[in-house]
Image 1 (cartoon, rainbow, N blue to C red):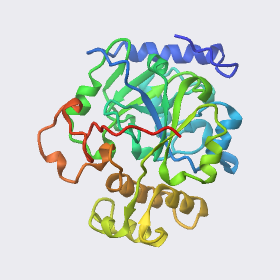
Image 2 (tube, rainbow, N blue to C red):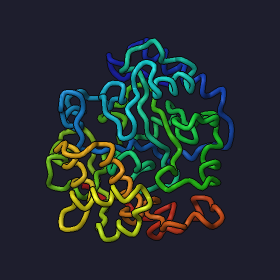
Image 3 (cartoon, helix red, strand yellow):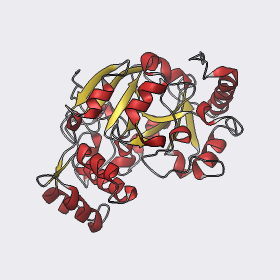
Amino acid sequence: MDFRGDERSGSAAGTAAERALRHVAALSSGPPVPRDLRLTLNFHPDRLVRGGRPILRALAADGAYRSQFVTGTSNDGLTAHPGGDRWRWESRIFGGAYDTGPAYQRPVYGALNFRRQVVGAAPRFGSSHFRLTAATLERATFCYPDSAAEPCHFGVVAAGMHLVELAEADRQDALNDYTEAHVHGPVLPERDVEALVLDASYRDTPVEAAARRLPCTVEWHPGYRLSVAELRRHADYRGPQYVELAERIAEDGCLDPRIIGDAVRAGRYLAQDLKMVWHCLARFGAPEGAGTARPAGADGGAARPAAQQPAASGGHTPGTSTPSA
């Protein structure tokens, strides 16, 4: 395994990453993982990081994709600090490998896209995603379910793993239907990213302009879009108060990721409330080729392997391709 990304990786980072990988590998067994699968890092491409910098501009300047311990941003709860929940979860999963090291050494989070979704493996965390190269599979660890759930099932590609089987057999809400991944060592767009896949709502926006400055291909997926009228039918999903908020920020009676991002940056509403609006959009406004487009109640039947799921809108394993820019 090569952890020599640049001077920021350093021997200490390599040692911490190797220790973490060895710790998880000792807990891993199962069938081989298909090498044509990819890791995806879902995120919101219009958010700001520490210092008020747009996240893609910060990435272009820094040259590396950073963990929330560095960026101070999260698409879920932000507990990435010593003694916080994220710190405690990582200490447990990685055998304390990162406990005493600097923040930049810590892994970044994504998911294994075993359902081959055009929107990435874990859209709960953002409308867009980086699709990583096959080589990054070798320095990734995995768990199921999410690390916040204190999982006891772990894996690495080299040893094989049962995590995909566990995910297939489970009956999670569509937004929780992912196998979490942790990429150890630097993630550099010029080396480790096959493509940045953006939601269609960001065409001809500053997000697209910033994305074009990165040393990787830009692709598009069809985009999330949901009418407020349709969202009212699902008011019990996150709560009627979030339907009311969605109605306040909607444009022409509709929501998309750009609209929610504009509202986040404007600061008029709580970020956590807008996150719930995003969950509603991700769950009920997904495009064809996204597993989160499953109709509510589709989980009532017997679970089927991903390879047997229908490719139509709402299927677990979509057939829609991702167009290049």
